[in-house]
Length: 237
Ligand code: IPE
Ligand code: IPE
Ligand code: MG
Image (cartoon, rainbow, N blue to C red):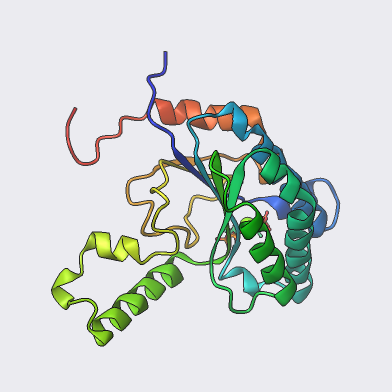
């Protein structure tokens, strides 16, 4: 029987929507729609995984602006629709929504919805779902460096105070613990600039399953694998 590792924070790189669309002979945007439906299902299924208190979903990277204008605007439109349609679901499930990423370049109407839903769910305590949108791991670290430099410049912090905790405190969501498990769908074996600081000791799980096909059973498989990992953190059992 699998022994249990604590699983408080699950992070997922949602990949493979485009290939899912191709496989089904439909336009790419249909793959993104199917992917958004899967996000909703997963959020609803979270109740079945009581230990998971944080779920971070990588939905749009700082590099995804390199896609066609048509695809980018379809993705932004989908984000707005998702937030409009499912705010109630988040509230009903006592889920707090956080956004991780840069506001720059984001369409005004997305920012408005993001602000509304994060405000409306801010009192929720059961679980936290974090959408990483216009997110880049290097950007997040760069922003932390800038914040620290500003504090040093104004004299509120000294150079000798810089340490790992201080850097972590200046990331986008310092109160969120590091991910225990990072899942990437669609068979790609890379991190693509996701949570570079926070995943230093996360367990990694890669699956060939495309994101729109990643159902509850697939998640259970990932957790089963995670439960069998020997998390040593450099020490010895
Ligand atoms: C993931 O699916 C969604 C985003 C990155 C926005 P992709 O669109 O990357 O799907 P593939 O990799 O082309 O299959
Ligand atoms: C990573 O997926 C980003 C998100 C899932 C949001 P990509 O499909 O953009 O990654 P690469 O380009 O294959 O590395
Ligand atoms: Mg991809």
